[in-house]
Length: 139
Image 1 (tube, one colour):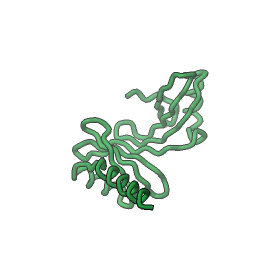
Image 2 (cartoon, rainbow, N blue to C red):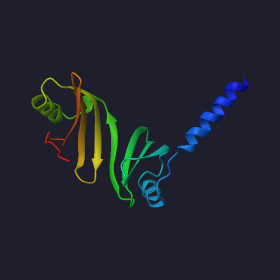
Image 3 (cartoon, helix red, strand yellow):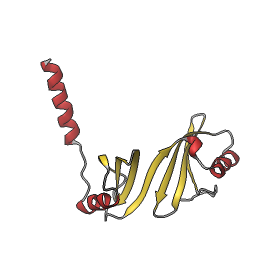
Image 4 (tube, rainbow, N blue to C red):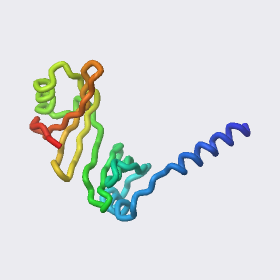
């Protein structure tokens, strides 16, 4: 019993030691946009970008903010069947033989609503993004 308790204490300590806290302006912007978010975990998405993963209104989301607190995007994982028909059609015509392994609906500051799909063909993998009408989104 003592070893198990000690192991749990060490795990909690280590996970808290590596917890990341964003700058105050990022935290404030997040709370203003997602007031009722729970289970929030922060990470870095590059030198000048922060990403929060969290639960919100029954969904698991991630949201990215610039270091100045500006919201950049919010991503929701969806079922593959949840992709709009024009997006599925575009993937089948532009990426024949590729299999969709994961899909996301993303609200972005730059492009509005886009649909992202992770594709796999043999050992190759790629991520593609489309507008709801099947138009490719170029980053």
